[in-house]
Amino acid sequence: MAGSVSSTKMEDLISNVPNIVVDKILENLPISKAAQTSVLSKQWRDTWLSLKSLIFESDFWNKHLLNEDRGPNWQKCCRIISSILLHHNGPVHEFCLFIPMNARGDLMNHSQWISFLSKNGVRKIVISNWSDTMDITSYIFSCSELVHLELNDFKLNAPPTDFIGFPYLKHLKLLNCEFTKQNIFCSLIENCKMLTTLRLENWRGTGMSHIVIDAPRLQTLTLIGNFESLAFGNILSLKSIYLYLRKMPEKLVTVQTIDAVNLLASSCQLQALNFDVYLALQTDDLAAGCAYKFLTAGGIIRSPPNTFNHLDSLCIRNLNLSDLGVFRYLLAIIECCPYIKKLGISVLPGEDVGCQHILDYNYNYKLNKLLEVNIKGLTGSIAELKLVEYLLAISPVLENLFFTFGRLGIESELRLSKALMRFPRASTKASLDCLWR
Image (cartoon, rainbow, N blue to C red; front, side, top):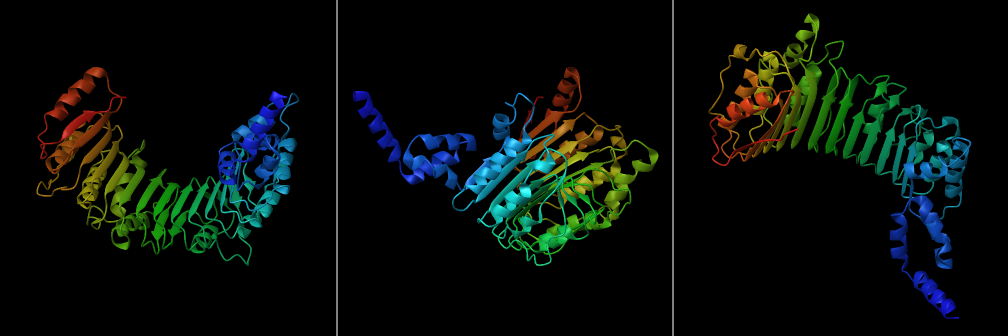
């Protein structure tokens, strides 16, 4: 009798948990665990079916797929997802789907699932496909309330003729996606008037060698891949850009790209610039001059870039300072960023021909705001030492210069550390610290 009373009290306690608390608990559980809460109380029985966030990540597949003795049962897993959506009550604001490797694409009913979501107020869709490339359903363009869209490894076909854009979309992330027709990407961006964050990585397909970014509200832009040219339209709100050109284009159509980077200084109030390109990482005579041509194409050496008056952070990666053109470029871009507070540089190993770098260093120029420098990959070349010496001489308020070594032995690292420590410093507070591997 006492046990029965105690059980009743416990059930009453669970039943009386406020709905807002129940929702919070269920939101933080994997969907399989959330479903099991239906046995706790009558009041909890159908609560999980009204979850506003439906997350089908790796744990879902591990539970329902890998326990099968007869091998993966893709059909069963897809049927569970379809059943959950079919019995769901109320709006679905977030839908995240992980598609594992070797998944049966013909059994993935994502067309049906996204059709359901488009009618239930979905605001965030994240689909990460680790199987073979799939076509994304055209129903994605019917999700008119989307705020966040993230797709990995899908084919994007032209939207329907009546598509007027995503009026509320702020965050767009397209990874390893293929564009099947010309201008799909450009028209997509043009029809997302509220877009603030864009990440485009490892794209492929028709019309994607010439990238045009025209998004007046865009604040953060990340481009990682191969392209021949880059141009900007209205980017007045842009604050941060990460540009990673994976390899030098076969056709050296780089004038627009360099000019586009230069024009960022006058077309927006950029605060963070990250520029990553394998400059001068060449192995044959024909390619040896590519970096120099790449830099001179935009007139960087003949006339320096515009001044970045609002830039707080500058990071340039994968530079071979033994190339005179690259070395000049680095100095030119640094001297066009007089107000930066953080500077990051990573260097590549190259032939030590630093003695050829006969330049007129402007020691009257000062980086009066620079507080932190981080240089990665030092090997002790003359060009690298000149760079460090110059930065220490023109940075009167510098607090920290962090550095890491390239492939050096312990004795070489110690000798290089001692050489760096001997350089004079304009800042009495400047500390040189090695971040050991």
